[in-house]
Length: 247
Length: 323
Image (cartoon, rainbow over all chains, first blue to last red; front, top):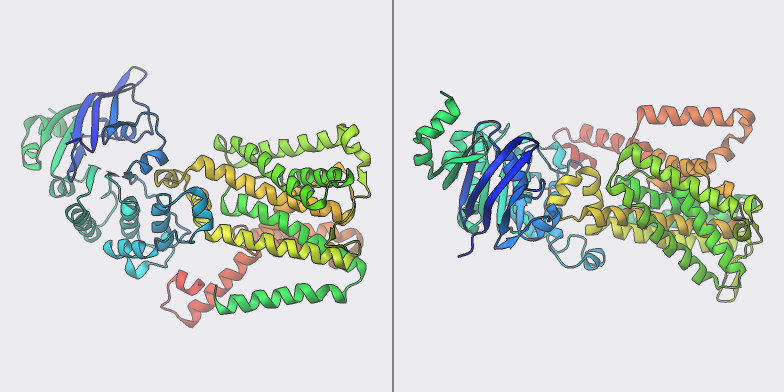
């Protein structure tokens, strides 16, 4: 079976610094892959290479077997790759409903049909289901900017899922979220994975969040993969402990 | 659209139909000017207010539209063809002018559009063989619709009003459509919009193109309204005036540019009694408004409505109260 995401020998250098060094891995349908590592390990650079924000110096990235080198973020989205950002990225002056509809509308019809067709691109019912799924139903008609930080994180995740992507890349989804909202976010992500077979790649510093959410974890240090496996294996790996604690 | 909004619109339209009958020829001319500038400002509101792309070139598109219409109609081309050609030409040029916006933003983009406006004015002034140079073009004919002339001010006013309603309805349709949502997303967060599949390149170029085409149509109408055009009528000052209409009325509000154009076109008439102090009073009013309400007059109205509803319904959220 073709992996949803295949990263092959990707390296990225900035002048003399090799931020990502010959990294290869596959992500299969339904997996939740965690990408962890100490600060400066190359996680974000790798993430940006996969998402086309940075061109890789060498290697290739395949989504469903298709090379995505040089694709713009909007093209990647149309290929079925959703993402969230480390910093909150919602549309604060638009309602929650409009945020969610926007996240799906570009996948409906043609450019012309979107001008002359229904104002909601026929997405209101689906958007309301998504909003309810992420427990934001009571905020549907609120402006996104008036939501709490945690609720905006939920909205951000909901937007990434709205177009029914094959793969969602989550960049520090737990960052700055309080414990109650964090449990909510984790539970919603797990439910989405189980009910809809969604595939995720998660970058996260919150170890407890990663260990309890992910089915497989890759650990990066100095741009290289130093360990990978299920959460328990990674937790007890001495190279991982050394990379985090030093010594 | 709510019943209340629909009633307000019908009442507004009734006023627009009846008002000119109470006015002198000059009054009707001023009302026609207001509608013409409103069309131009509506276009800039789409580019700037909804899509967030700064443009100081709206007057240049009015100029291109005006000269295109004048030259074509005076050469015997039927007015509908001339007006459509003027609008389409501005759409295409606006589309091309949008390319710099893909690389630069904010004040850098403002300077690029400003330079474009200067370039158009220079071309209109220097290419005398075509444009008449600084002397401009005189005697531009007004259209004849199904055998009915619009030479008289009242008849031409209704012609302008019909196009104003048509263009306002078209803009309303665009803003409510997924295109409108994409324009707003471009304004609020282009990086996120791109990651959600919004083609930022196409959206930016379309925002410029549609906004510019409104400028072109307004210019076409202005040429027929004044029946005389010269390069000075489309200089940077006029671009700033159209920008002021959008900002004063409320950028990003549908009725903002219409209200802004009303104030900017009518203010000189109301302040005529102040004689030489007119510009000083006008400038002071604009400064006060921008300091206390940078979102324009409609922003002020929305703030007042929200405050009032929160007072009536203390538990309401901000958005519910503002609805």
